[in-house]
Image (cartoon, rainbow, N blue to C red; front, side, top):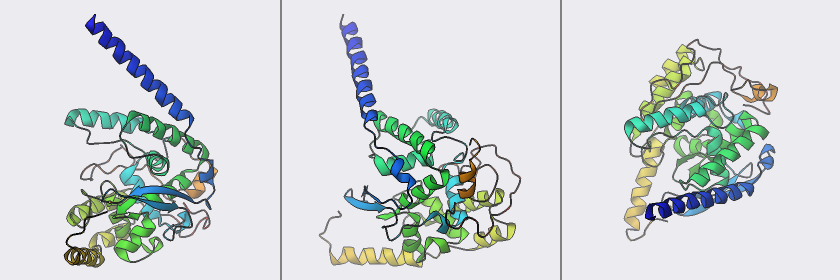
Amino acid sequence: MKLKRILVFIIGAVVVYGIYVGISLLFLPTVDSLKDRRMNMTIRVKDWHGNYHPLVVGPKNPYWTRSAAIPPEMKWAVILAEDSRFYKHEGIDVKAIKNAIKYDLEKKSFARGASTITQQVAKNLFLSREKTLSRKAKEIVLAHRMEEQLTKGRILELYLNVVELGPMVYGIGHGARYYFGKPASALTPRECAFLAAMLPGPRVAYNPYRNLDKVVRRSDAILKLLRRKGILTAGEYQLALSQQPNVGRLQQKVDESIQKEEAFPNLTGAVMPEPDAQDMAEQPQAGGAAETVAEPEPGTSGDAASEAPVQPPPEQEHPEEGF
């Protein structure tokens, strides 16, 4: 009888939780407004000390970078490193989920996730960072809605403008200024790969203040993928490899941080189905299937993609819509 009561309790709890999740899904926000590229919204982001701050998403943000101003190498570096099947899935990558489950079972840990770029946009714009089944369900539903109503180019533009790249550094526009003192449009292939290399863990694992060599090695692997897929020519690839990111600004910020700590020692911190015509106009002008950078140290392909090089993108095409 005791076991029966326990089973009934467990089943009841699961049913109640399922009802809660179902109801919460009914009250999810719409994504229609995201279609308007002039749209502005304010979200909350957490600093490295756990405190929340407002962040404007849209053209009113001084660091906002339109898709047309983002270098193709930046877009492809992120796709190849973070979501190799971005142009093939519809928001959820079932193949990546299967591979992640297999990997985690082999390693007996939750070392690898399988969130697509679209899922990450949904989470960053509308959801909290809590790791619960209900949040994951909401994330999946919102990602599916985005894929139905937004182009891939718009989804990628949103993603690149809200990704975390440093202490209260969100978006590649801010990241380019913070690390290299230039707008995102002026980033070199090496710098694009450097920023993309930080994405898995800018706070710890791929924090250039702590692990610069690790970030550079991962950026080398991303450059290799860009070359393999024909985004970079042989000459551009060799030039990028020969360049080392100018870390002078990094060291300057570290020194400033140390000085502040010395001056205020008692202060505590505050925190692809085939794309349609519109997507073809927006996506990076280079062919080939995308390839995933392996975690934690990239260098191997995530998919058995074609090795045939593709033509680099034309210098100017659809300047208003860009990617």
